[in-house]
Length: 115
Image 1: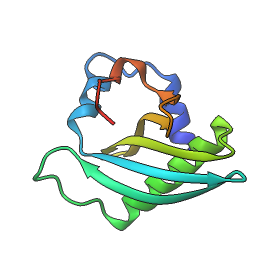
Image 2: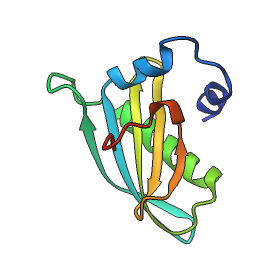
Image 3: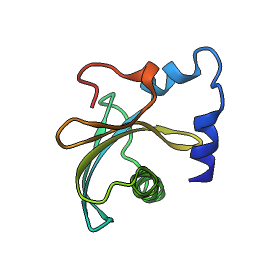
């Protein structure tokens, strides 16, 4: 979580942020009740030939999403989080509540219909 939070404050440099969209992506749906975040579904997005995430990648992604929801103060509801799966670990691209309200986004990466 600290690594992700640190990356969020740094300037990624030219081309780097856009490159995240070229990575395999993971969409995670979570249901939160009483500040307890339950991951209920995930799906891999991107190229057809992208390998399925390893167990460790999925565990890191689940932890990252739960940490993000904690930091954002999400206490109840359904959320959809889009992550890029990079060699350095998962990176959050966006997170929206079920009603479409934005929880978090890397604004330069918002693409209509991306998540």
